[in-house]
Figure 1 (cartoon, rainbow, N blue to C red):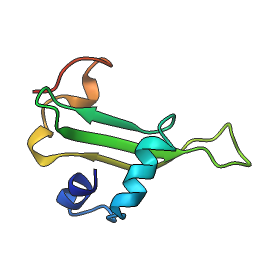
Figure 2: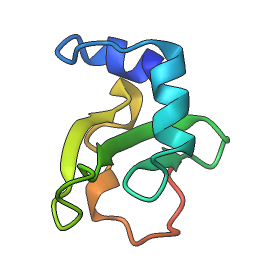
Figure 3: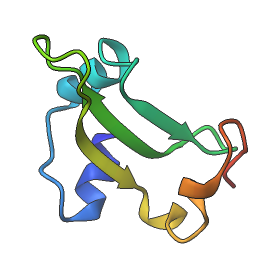
Length: 82
């Protein structure tokens, strides 16, 4: 996830640990997209503020450069990318 964020050249790059937390502790509000080769090709990170559980704050949205323009956002939940 960190490498993809860096490759966008527009997102602030967080620590590897921060992305690990997003993928584990914030897994209910974040998503990681994995291609048929098993590599991460995109992600969306977000969280629900503790005092506003009805609100979703989207932190980052990123797609790997080699996965851009391939309809990633249009795929149904389990459709492979690759």
